[in-house]
Length: 75
Image (tube, helix red, strand yellow):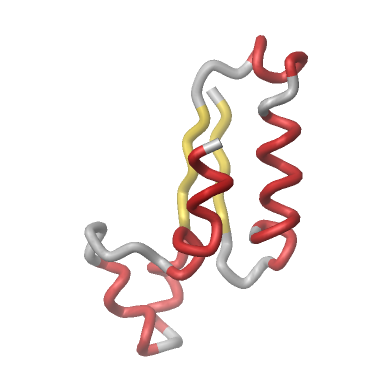
């Protein structure tokens, strides 16, 4: 199992940087070793300092990070 903790404020963990990570995980060498990937989006932690993030305490509301990276996650 591979646990990924994602921080919205880290540019290498979104868009192209995140796609590169997904492509690496999907490579044959890694795919044989990693059977499950768990992604934890820490956007809800920003609720303490940025008011518009307070809604992310509700797990039914997709975060900005998730919406930007949804296609890569589906891969």
